[in-house]
View 1 (cartoon, rainbow, N blue to C red):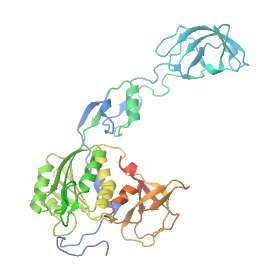
View 2 (cartoon, helix red, strand yellow):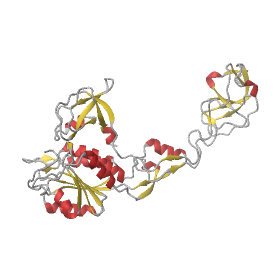
View 3 (cartoon, rainbow, N blue to C red):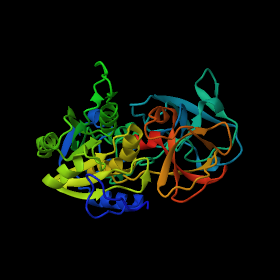
Amino acid sequence: MDNQEVDCGGCDTIPQPLLSIDEALEILTSSAKVTNSTQLIELDNTLNRMLAIDIHANISVPSFDNSAMDGYVINLKENQINTSGGFTFKINDRIPAGSIGDTLASGCAARIFTGAPIPKGANTVLMQEECELIENKSKIEVYRPISLGENIRPIGNDIQSGDVILPKGKQLQPQDIALAASVGINKLKVFHKIKVGVFFTGDELAKPGDTLQQGQIFNSNRYSLVALLNKLGCEVINLGNIKDTFNATCDALEALKSDCDLIITTGGVSVGEEDYIKSAIEELGQLNLWRIKIKPGKPFAFGNLGHCAFIGLPGNPVSAIVTFLLFARPFIKKMQGATHYLNTAFKTQANFDWHKPKPRREFVRVRLDHATFPTKANLYPKQGSDVLSSMVWADGLIEIPEKTTVKRGEVLNFYPLNEMLS
C-alpha cells in the first residue's frame, strides 16, 4: 500500500499515512513565523532583501512639468491650435536640463533638452526633427498642425506624492531600488536575514578534496544546500559533517537551536537503523510532519525545537534539491516576510509519453525546447533521485499528478528552476 509503511527497524509501531503535497505545504506555510526583526540599511545593500514596510512617495515624480525630448518648447497661440502648419516662432532662450528658463512670450520658442523644466507661458514641445531653422537660426518654422501639451511630461506623470511605490513583503530588485532613489529615499527598512543552521549526517560522506575511501561518496548535499540558502539571502551557520550517531545528532541540534530561526539537514530522516534525525527531533522537540506522497523525496521531516523550526531533507541529492525548492523555499520566503512565497507554475506541453501511473505525485526533470511553438518540455532520460546531472541539464520540473498517464502534447504544470532559485 502506498499510503502505509509496514513496521521495520526504526519505524513507529503504528504505521503513518503519507501526506499529500498540498497538505504538507499547507502545514509548512501555516507554521512559518514571519521574522519581526528589522533594520534600516543603505540602498546599495538592499538587493534581494525583503521590504519590512510600505514605502510612500513624499514627492511627485516628476516634480515639475518637463520636456520628454530634445526640441523646442513654444507658446502656442489659441488660434494656432490644430490648424494648418506654416507657423514661425522666434527663439529667445536655451534651457538645458537642470536650468530654469525665462517666461515664454506668445509666439516665441526656446531650445529645450530632455528633462528640462517647461518654462512659464509654454504649452507644448516640438521635436527638433520637425522644426526648420530659418533667418540665421534665430527662428523655427513648423509645417504641421500642432496640439497643446505635446511631448510634455506633467507633474506626477510617474508617481504622485503619497503613492505606495513599494509594498511591504517585496523582495527588492534593482528596479525597486532605483524607484526608491527616484523619490529621494536613501535607506530602506528591511527584515533581518533569517539564520539557518545546517549539518549533514552519514559516515559514508567525504569532503571534496579528500581521498575517497572504499564505500564513501563525496558530500554534494552540503554544497547544494548552502548555495540554495545563500541564494535566498539567509545567514548560514554550517556545522558540516557530523558523526552518524544519535548523540552526535542531538548535540548538533542543541548547538544550533538557540542561535537559529531554522535548522535544515539532509539525510537521516528515513526508517533505517542508522537514521537518527527523526528520533532526535522527537527527543528534543516536536515532529509535525514526516513523509510526503512525492517522488523524488518521500522522507521529509518538519518540526521544531522550541522557537527554532526544523526541516529534514532526504539524503539523495536530487530529492534534497527538489524538496528544498518545493517545501523549504516557500517556508523560508514566508519567514523572511515575503508576500509572494509560493512557487509559480506555468502551463507547458509535454514532449514525451508517461505510460506508468504512479501512486505518488512526481516532479520530473525537463528542458524546454524553445525552437517549437508552443514550447514543449523534453524529458531527461534518467529520472533517478541519485542522478544529480539531471538537475544541471534541466531548466525546470514538470508535475505529473498521482495515478496519471501522460500523452505527448498534453499540458502540464511546469516549474522553472530560475524562478524557484530566486
